[in-house]
Length: 417
Image (cartoon, rainbow, N blue to C red):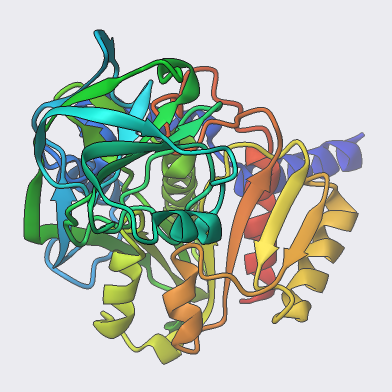
């Protein structure tokens, strides 16, 4: 009986040591996605508010800092939408963020413009370019149903604006906000732009910030036996911000989920019983949505030598998981894939670990390009599909594989000590 009690006690200790705190993660997410954070973007200092919140968490955990305040300030150019964002089709008023989104490269614009509906054969960049040859649409908006990735957000000579129609919720991006073009680009729900519509009335107020001030937030736990070597957990805490005075983009999955897990990992490793052998650094970047600005700045201005990072794990959009996880860069690092699969095979933490090759689609990329061994993890599953929209909220947020992924990460990190 005593032996059984001892075994049970040991098991409980192991479980306790590995335990994540999903309640804490949800608390973090709720705060980061609240209206007070303004979408963690570039209107009303949303990113600065979020950074201040993260700093307070680091202070509570008594983490070490490379600077006086955990912050690494820097700037980048960004066109913002802090004022009026109004659109009417004929006499119907549409809601910004819900019924339409405006490209971040769009200039301020006010007036009524005629609508010209492009033929159905115009559905991609090639056909769009051919269609425009020799044509001019003075004071008009061209309405297109197609994918124009190469042209989107750019100046089209002779064209006042383009409205891209979609049957789905329009996604918003701010990665093209580093410049202001002369053509207004809008993505709108097709139901609000019937073929008989004759005109569109706009009142869009933009403000270009050539040197928008922002900051990365960075802390670390000092290792017990090898403090000059680092393992890094990274995520971006920023999101898209606000479109006008009311519409804000909460960014629950992208990427309050990754930020919450990084802070939970910081809380875990800050406990004396979990102090690692090597140092662990927690890097939370701004400017990811603007084009990996924060992580790119950091790799050019590191707070300690990049050569001292043995391994980096970037977490971005980790709120689902019913179908497992995808690990970017594991085709380059097959040893990482095999080790994680071995751990998962023994413990069954998550349904599947799917490999993926190189992709410059999150904050791991500047580190990988700088020679740091880096991976990027995101979860998979249909239980939360909102992306870059006003509907990416924390309401009924699944965090399906949160516990399993957390334990997979901590177990794997133990093998690196």
